[in-house]
Image (spheres, rainbow, N blue to C red):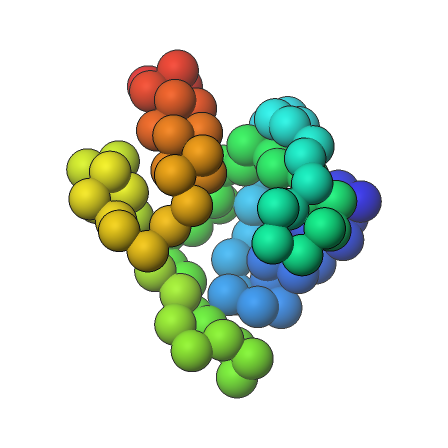
Length: 86
């Protein structure tokens, strides 16, 4: 799974990453899919979206907290995990 994550990040947004650790596995409440979240460190700061994506961008913690079109639990998870690693 880790190699697939690295490959997808490279293919989809031209970003090489270092996987730090697995954070959590959970079921997506909308699709029923099993999702696995990892904490990763980017090996560069530039991202470029592939033709499969409309857009790819970085978000600061403040920007994440202001997002309205995001699942509340996911927003809280991102906020908590970001704060615990700064």
